[in-house]
Image 1 (cartoon, one colour):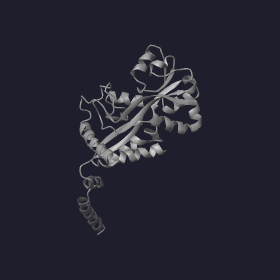
Image 2 (cartoon, rainbow, N blue to C red; image 1 turned 180 degrees about the vertical axis):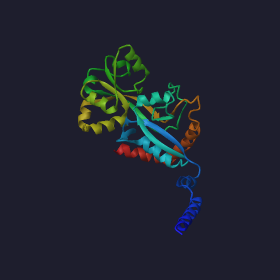
Image 3 (tube, rainbow, N blue to C red; image 1 turned 45 degrees about the vertical axis):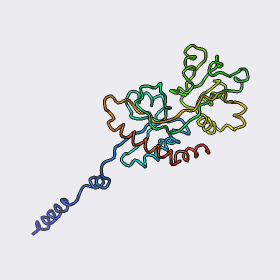
Image 4 (cartoon, one colour; image 1 turned 90 degrees about the horizontal axis):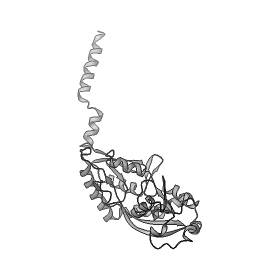
Amino acid sequence: MSMRPALVFLLLLGVFLIHVKPVSAQAENSIGTPRQRVVLYGEENDPPYAYLNGAVMAGAYTDILRQAAMRLPQYEIEFAGVPFKRGMEMLQRGEIMAFYPPYMDAERDWVDRYSEAILDESVVVLCTRQFVSHRTLLSYPFDYIGARFGNTSGYRLAGKDLFEMADRHEITLEEAHSTEINLRRLLAGRIDCYVNDRLAIATSLGEIGTETIEVRRELTETAVLGRHQGAIAYTPDDTAKWPHRDEFAAALDIVLRQMHEDGVIDQILQHYVMY
């Protein structure tokens, strides 16, 4: 008699287990086809464009790409931050599939493809007033012989001619990890000039806490080097390590064009310009 309740219980449990599906299978079926995971690596220290806020990627490019990700439900898009120079080296070695936001540069011929242009940036030369007061600066970079230039590690914004002048020891080129460090050195008189995007410079000066009037007294723009377009650069993939790369890139390009047409990208950037 004591065995009967136990047998009944085991029979009922068996029936129950047959009809119950695993929770993971239910979740997969509710979504449909599993989403393709994509990790977009971004520069970790280039406010307001791309930077780490604690452990989370932030900035105008990141916000734009997060908005784009919402329009690509077939992909599970994640974001990670690395220093610019390291990110470009990882990309060239094929360790990561995509990195943002290097400028679209034809001389970087190892990049297989770029995304649709995301933002336009204005590159300027910023120098100390003390340096400018003793110079006639009409032709960049040839009128800057003897100058001490700061450069963010891995950046090539200052142009091929300036780097060649550095190789000939006609100017000094000193690298630092971030825009903020370079600007602090500029304000301290440890370097004479620095090249970067105008908005990135303004944002970092604001973070330093320098008042506008003080900046005008100490620093001045001496040249505008042009407008450059930031985008996602994709790694070479001769070994088919990233079989979903081209399909993802094409889908993202369609979304980015739509966001440009809809004015969404301008709206996102305006928040940072106001900031």
